Amino acid sequence: MASSDRQPRHGRNWSQGTDERQTLLIHNNTMDPIPVAAENDAYEINKPLELVGKDKDVLASYVRKCDHRLLAYLCVGYGLDSINKMALSYAKVAGLTKDLGLSGTDISVALGAYYLGSFFFQLPSNLMLKRTRPRWWLSAAMLAWSTVTMCMALSKKPRDLAGLRFLFGAVQAGYLTGSLYYISYWYPRDLVRRRTGWFFASSGVGGIIVGPLCSGLSAIHSPHIASWQLIFLVAGACSALWSMLGPRVLQDFPDTATFITDEERALVTRIMVRQNTVASSQSVRLRQVVMAMADHKVWLWTIIDFCANGATQVNGMFGPTIIASQGFSPVAAQAMTSLTNLMATTGMASIAYVARLVGGSARALWISNAITALGFILALASQSNAARMVALFLFSFASPQPAAHAPAWMLANLQGNTKPAMAAAFSSAVGGLGPLATAFVYRDKDSPTFRLGHSVCLSMTVAAAIATLVLYVVLRRENAKRDRSPADISDLTPEQVLDLADNHPDFRYKL
Image 1: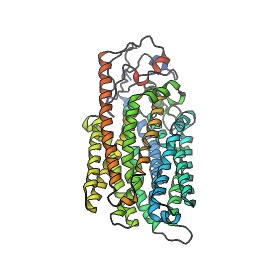
Image 2: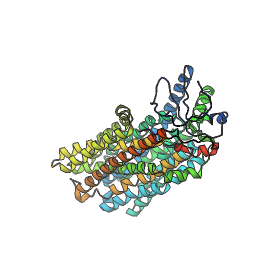
Image 3: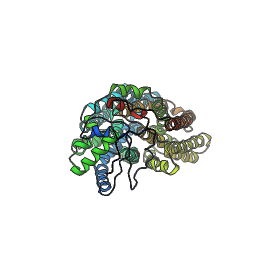
Image 4: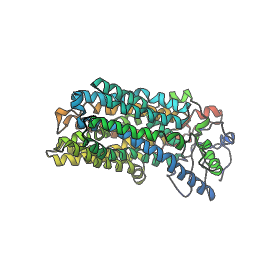
């Protein structure tokens, strides 16, 4: 590995690398005095680490192992999470509404209760992730939400269902943002966005599976157990079994992993030191928690996440209902949602590649929002069931893209040992309230046009596009300002440099 002299340079942009080039540039703008050589790396802030010859092969081997073991496990877990989360929507058309005497408002309250539980427990969950062993925390979260899902089969009254959905949101809260943070400290910065895209796409795979699964379960008629109870029991049991593999498959940190070689560990530790992402020895820094909450850029990403989540959850929460309202039987509607979820999976899996093709995340999100808006406009203007189905497929494809890519875009533009984790939790918690609004605007009495719901989601899509434009301008101006007038930080101590996070004068935001 080539290393240059150790005099700090400021104002130069080192963050224009792409995901996987023949020469990989590793970026860092802070340092933490922890492993061997961290003291020396204090003088190499934001300098490129060029990997040549064997180093490239070693890194490729390390990344491949992480993909096949850690990322694969997390993706399957998130797919199962999606199945658990959508189980209520499928149980609704499988007899839950009739057996529990639920009104349209009762279902909306139960759907919304999940997002309230998630909102209140996102930040505490990510703080716990930093204070505990990640493999145990993530596995425990999965086992807990699986248990709650199975308990929903015992619901007797609407309040039972609402209470369990709130508890489900609370115990599940840390898995999404915890997994994103976990990915960010296992992979070099320029490899994170593509892996995050794959992770989000796995929820769509879960959606593809849940439709035929619930359709089959709904066809089972037993005097001892209702079809909707089977849906909750099977969904929870599948993820409970998967959670038990977590402690054996997952590992806590790269520098303590046992499935990589010493050579791979030495190289990746050197890379992570440069990036200030050696999570095994980093404690929570209160200053960076405050920085995350006060950063206007984090708030803009949160607005994007809020609006995108509101639109993307239409298919997850109301897909079976919308399809059934177009004249299909409940069983057929459940099965057909596998097609809309296939569209969602394709959209989420492709957004990182679209961003590379069009030259940046902001441009990719504008395209996604434009297609989503077109879908909702078509749904509002259509007079036929066939046209409404086309609209459903259109916004099911495009609306999940901003929800999947905005968090990855944010994590690629945040630095520090605490700020990314707190920003991810905050954005997910507040952004996760978007579907809470959606839950109350898709009313059964508006079937089959659902004009109120589509109008609200169209407005949220436009708001996401505007927030993306504002954020793009803010990031571009900040980069230009740092190019024109790089700040002198040569008199700062290592601790002070650490707390600069992405405010470091050599850090450049990815547009």
